[in-house]
Image (cartoon, rainbow, N blue to C red):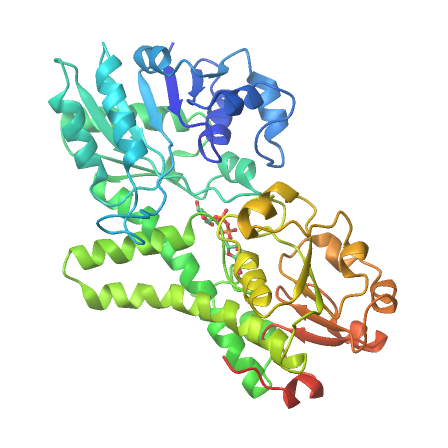
Amino acid sequence: MVKICCIGAGYVGGPTMAVIAVKCPAIEVVVVDISKPRIDAWNSDKLPIYEPGLDEVVKACRGKNLFFSTDVEKHVAEADIIFVSVNTPTKTRGLGAGKAADLTYWESAARMIADVSKSDKIVVEKSTVPVKTAEAIEKILTHNSKGINYQILSNPEFLAEGTAIEDLFKPDRVLIGGRETPEGRKAVQALKEVYAHWVPEENIITTNLWSAELSKLAANAFLAQRISSVNAMSALCEATGANVSEVSYAIGKDSRIGPKFLNASVGFGGSCFQKDILNLVYICECNGLPEVANYWKQVIKINDYQKSRFVNRVVSSMFNTVSGKKVAILGFAFKKDTGDTRETPAIDVCKGLLGDKAHVSIYDPEVTEDQIQRDLAMNKFDWDAYEATKGAHAVCILTEWNQFKELDYQKIFDNMQKPAFIFDGRNVVDAEKLRGIGFIVYSIGKPLDAWLKDMPAIA
Ligand code: UDX
């Protein structure tokens, strides 16, 4: 029986291993983590992350061929294939601070693997890492090898939060990079056989190590760039009277451009895009490519611009001040169907409004009050959208939760101060209908109301 061990029971490691286990009953999969509360949660009825379909998958194989454990060393020692799926946050201090990836967790995982291994191992990079990380890991392992053969593979994960199980069941592609040596090819083949249990062979791409590592950063950079491109257009649409949804639809019909990922928004968030672009920028700079670095930096600059443009629009529309005014925030997660707030644009928008002394009141169906406390050092959190908007001067919609489309806006309007404003950062509400009720409505990238035209935002 092939044994797989995954170090790191987070958003990537947990769901990915659960899917491998459910698709490969003959493989034993153990997910290990040093955090006992996290492992306990994976072993309980309330899993530590929310993903549609995850509960069912875990229930189907937990205790059979899927296990969660804190006994890291034992399971690493026993495994044939070790996935490393630990955090690689952006460095906050020292060389490369603010840009380079922090590989502390990765390095200690590699050293631990070297310490406890007694048989040959395939070590798989699952978390996104800077290009050439495999080389560093290889050095740590081979310098401490005690005669053991290690093969390092890069197998980046492309799943998105909220659709993790769907993405894992039907991936657009699986990418496996390895050394171009007979041993390297053998290792690639071994991992390919795992995925081949459910992924068609033509969707499993094999490359050299560096191509696989770089492809992950490149994919995220291209996706984020699409959003910054459409968001840049949204500013121009507001200035000219064009409608960004119509522009997105029109350009998306070009099969070379395609229709997906062209929704203008208050900005992209999530744990990956900004981190990976910063990392890409750093790699470019380290390789003496400042022009390339600057090109990608611009994607982040436009994202920051979009968030501050939104705040400026709110403040300027409300007579240039929100001081002492209640502003209701509907949606705090970085996108719908998740409680994750990492890099959510809502943090910057709220900080901007708080900086202008607004009284901010937040409602999100999945984000907890504790999380808001950690993100904003404040605890004005409401359990209900109607409570959050009661007595407010303005409502800002920052996450595209479906339920925000179905709220009783007449009731909300009746309980708000007048003039009542709605700033829709996700284009989820029917602006015309809300104008009919009496709201002044701002929709990102859409033609402006007479009111908003009279009060231009200074970005
Ligand atoms: C992303 C990548 O999609 C995934 O392949 C990678 O493995 C990890 O990073 P994720 O961060 O989970 O996944 O979310 P994603 O759905 O890509 O959304 C990222 C951000 O972009 C969100 O804040 C979302 O609201 C925003 N977005 C997305 C837009 O503003 N407009 C769009 O058209 C699409």
